[in-house]
Image (cartoon, rainbow, N blue to C red):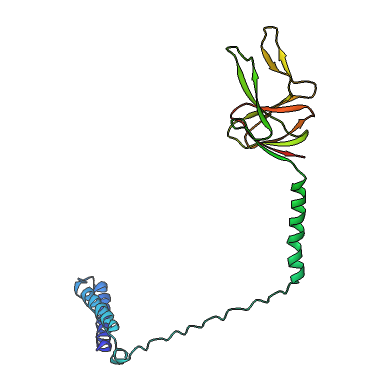
Length: 213
């Protein structure tokens, strides 16, 4: 059926085209030839669109897709000497323990006394300006001081047990020849020297970590 429509359309198209050329030469109306050409084109397209009986009856067989599972690759296992693996971490741990055991560490809080190394010192006792300050007695030496608090702090190194009296009669700390004051920012670590016979004084709310070098 499709081939028949296609053939008829082709014939009509050719006839219309011939008439169109003749009418154009004679300069007559081209309406009828144009209609024949269009009808011929439509019939030809319809004929081509209609499937033949063989194509309609031929079933489409589904395509089978085979899935191939990839076999996992076996990676070679490297053999290690069990004695070397067992000995390595033991040696490193022993070295680390030995280094830490030789260092003195302090955690100082200006708001809380540290048992065994801290005491309160009173200035201007009996006056309206009486003040108690917390001091810390640490072993003499050079320390790596880290600010573990939330505010910038000052580390004061004063002479132990001495007070200076001003002309006005007020008591104050004695810095001495080897004392000093150190500013340390939050998270910063500085080096502080605490000589023999000196103490550490902190202003609240300072919190510091001291590790002896």
